[in-house]
Amino acid sequence: MKDYTSENPAFSEKIRIVEESDLVNAENDAAASKQLLQNDLVLSARLDKCLGSVESGLELDEGIASDTLIGAVNEVFQFGSESKRKLVENLTAMGVAASTDDTWGTLLDKILDMTDTSRDTVTAAALLSGYTAHDAAGAKITGTLADKSATTDHSATASLDATNKRLKLKVPATAKYSSSNYLYAAYSAIASLAGLTSAKLVKNNTVLGIMGSSGNMDTSGATASASDILSGKKACVNGSLLTGSMANKGAWTGATTGSGNVAVPAGYHNGSGYVSGSGAYNKGVSDADARVNTGSANYQGGYSAGVRDADGRVNTGSTNYQTGYSAGVSATKVGTAGAGDVLSGKTFTNGSSVGASGTMADKGGATVDAGGVSQDDNYTYLSVPANGYYNTSSRLRAANSNIFENAKIKIYRTSLKMSKAGNSITIGSNIQRIIYFHMDSRKSATVNYSPIFNCKLNDDGTVTFSVKCTNTDGAYSVFIYLVALESSGAYNMGTAYTKSVSGTLVKDTENIVNFTSDGRVKSIVEYNAEMINSARSYCPTLEAWIDGNTIYSTLYEKSDGTPKYNATVKYTVL
Image (tube, rainbow, N blue to C red):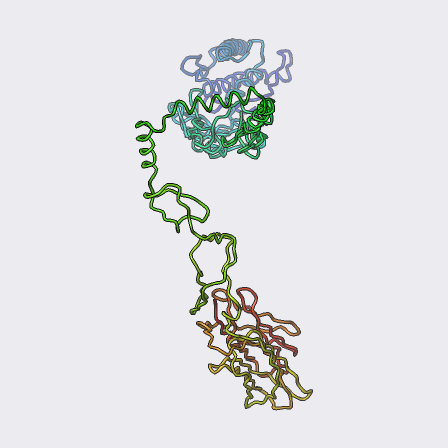
């Protein structure tokens, strides 16, 4: 058995108890009693530490008063009974179910359950700021959790939960909040998340601080239907887009044919339409005429009586009649037109006469020979032969001979051989205009060349074609075809304009070169095309022609490769 003192007690869970009649182990009897006391002292120390009962409870560290073994045991049991009772009362006051019938071991477990912090999870971050507690190791901690409950509103970050279809507000920071606190997000943030714009709101309606666009009218009160809306037009009615079906009758017109009504078709009328009454009027006149027998005695008698009575009431010789007649005639004599200003066969009144006849010749719709023909650099003029009335159907004409001055069309065909030094040929003597020309090449199998070509209308009326080869001389020719306008008299060609193009030819293809002119083309004055690549083995076919306002040329390359070219045209315009 271990020695003990009140300052260094030792607790034993097992105590050997013997009867007094057990003489062999009698010495253990006193030891057991003292161990019970030792256990009680340990329990008292634990109670002092856990319950703070040292100052208010029994003094458990007092010694045993009795000198006898039995007395000491009785004191120990009495002391233990009082300690148990006091312990049970303290536990009960703390809300722990306990009874003096509980063993010391049971009561000790209940005390240890109260004071064991090993299972506690509290941390400083989870403990409110200003408060203290013990952590799982029994160490004292001071809380750092902020208390936000005193501030009513807290700004939060808003987001949309598309899966669960809800708006979420994120708590701004870890802290203590109460049921009196609110999280908020600005209208603009929520509107932005929802994609809300003024274009999606009805005019004068405001949602989340956004006012509806002025173009979004509230159509909830509209009552129109498709038949009330003009066909092809659209309108919003009570939130729906309707396409009109009302027929557009525009300036519809109708006419009466007799005594019956005229049905007006349903639809939109623009106010310019009408229903003519001429049919009913003419029908009435026709019916009236059918009822009047002009050959009857009654009709003839009535007519004669009417004429007689009218003549009797008019005194043409009276002063009143003469004065009124003269005043009326004088009042009608107005205007400054003369006989030549009024179409022949028509009458008019001017300041000197009433009912005068016009003498102006009527040339409306007539074809009239022009009084003369003249030209300048830009136009041909036809003069009106005589005064008269002309309308848009009237025409002035002039013989072709008066315009071209005995011009004639002539076709030339010639050929010339080509060399590196160059060749040229002059055609014609009085050519005024080149209408069309074409050059076609022929080569021998042993000749390799690329030509330079030029066509020029000379001042003396001749046309010069020049060609030369940029490669080996040889026995080969080019054939030239020229369609020209000749004239024995002078002819003004007008101002000449020049256009140039360049590009790359495609093998075995008619490459169409386009010269866009500055107006309507009058004639081609000069044309030339030059092959830049001197190593080509075939001469292109060169020609130029007019189509509408555009001059075209065809360049044709037979050999391999894509040679370069320059082409220039000189032309005049009307």
